[in-house]
Image (cartoon, rainbow, N blue to C red; front, side, top):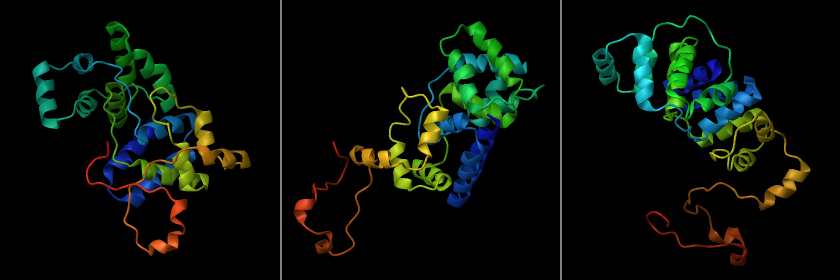
Length: 242
């Protein structure tokens, strides 16, 4: 969690594309495969399901911080974000956690979904006590189902292609289906994602879909495209395709 929280902060604090790309490459080249797999899932657009109801998250944060409700509400109104409010009002942690993102998602956050409120309360108190402020912010975003980060899927694709030394189009193909909620990110899947292309995969990829791309106006001479019969043509209408 520590490394992913650091990456999240770096991506959130800069608007420079190159800086974001460098941060992504640094993370993916050093993170354990099982942790990197979950990072790809979230950064590519995967949405975590809510594990703890907002009402309970707020209630237990107030109890843990030993605050009056009015003071918490005033802080929340000033900050405007529940996860950020909680991260800042909690007392400093008494210990540090080296648990990786994958274990957090599968062994800690996942089991909270549908758990008894007393179990959730005990777990939150234990977890908050081993996380720093930035890590608590990220943790609350993940368990609340509100994780968002200012990075595009294309930038993630470029970063993965750079560390894998393969074509970004191949990475884009391999990423198809990665954010499906029914698919669990694993170390094996991540290693397959950044692996060099084998001859067998090269044969198989011909029948797999490419991700959608925006249509652009043709810049050159249409005659350079060759025979019309070799192309599939469709009308381009304004508005949203149905």
